[in-house]
Image (cartoon, rainbow, N blue to C red):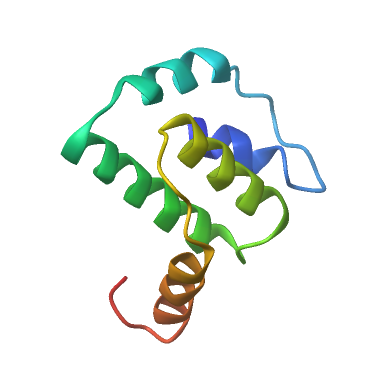
Amino acid sequence: MLLLARLLNSLPDKPQAIDVDWPAALQDYAQLTGESRKALLNALTQAALLSGTYKGSRKRFLTEVFATCQTPLRSDEVKAQQQRLLSGQAP
């Protein structure tokens, strides 16, 4: 839901509004540890890449989430994952 709200904001034609408490969600993300954090970051990365290229609002979104989770965002790994998705390989 949160990713959907953020991605909808990047569309040129704005659909109906989705009310998401992004600051509260980020606070919740910051509390995650271990496998829960890894699963969240992996799911959000895949969803962002499936919605378009890794630049602009998608890159800013991932940068914000990874920073909140105090996890380095490795752009080279994200780009490699995007190439795998584009070529039909598993992420």
